[in-house]
Amino acid sequence: SLGLVAMFVCMIVNVFFVFKQYFYLEDRETYPTVDVVITYDENATARLVNRRNLNTDYADSVDRALSFFNLFAVSETNSDVYYTELMSSLPFEMEELLDVDLGQMNDSAVVVTESLAMAKGLNVGDQMTIYMLDGTYSYEISRILPDTGLFSGDKVFVDKTRLLEDFFGLPFLDNLGNSVYVRLKSTADPDAFITGLKADPEYSSYRIFKTVDLDEIETNARYTSSVLAGLGVLVIITLVTIVHSLFPIFTLKLKKQYGTILTLGGSRKFMIQVWGM
Image (cartoon, rainbow, N blue to C red; front, side):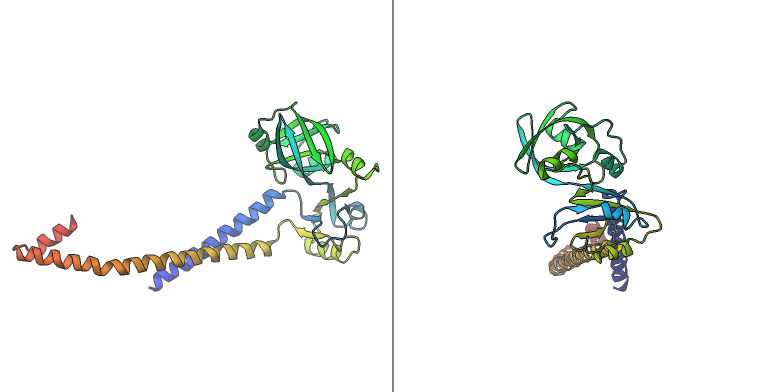
């Protein structure tokens, strides 16, 4: 009926808004203090991003640009070997990204997530060996942080100064990283900022995206709700088919019961009481 169709449409609309809100909050939770990310992909001509020009040429738009050097690595603690995702930057950049205080942190300290510590039985003061880019690095766990934003799951954090010096053989590479997290000023337009970066030869080959893209969120929500709607239609068709196939059997059984009751001298009222039981 039209009522059922209207109810089904309303349900799908509500599901769409639920998913839209879910995807929005998920992105906002992952990047609570970041508006734009600059990183590399398979089309990038370089794997390192220099944030220096962001703070000078785009000073009217950029509030802060945090330069991180992130990579996957193999870690070992207590003879347990496992994969981790290593985040590295200057300590103050990690503090700004997560809005936390890391305290005094030297280049031999490592911070781990709470979920990783619980999964591997790690404590502050434990030793951790990290194997990356043909090198072996020994660290001591200095802090265990609750999973927050980008720093969640099997992730660890170290000061990038030592790594970049070892990898590239040059000191003072603080402006370099393979991911730059940009927070814009409140007056800046993210779309206009990204358009300007893509027209800049310095950054045009990198992958640049908004952390909260409302158009993409709406597309994902519409797709997900459409899939659920399709599944709902299939379920309804299946149920209708089952009911339709069982209905003749059920009515035939009722007719036989009705005939038996009348043959034995039963009344219609008695028949209704039997069916009610």
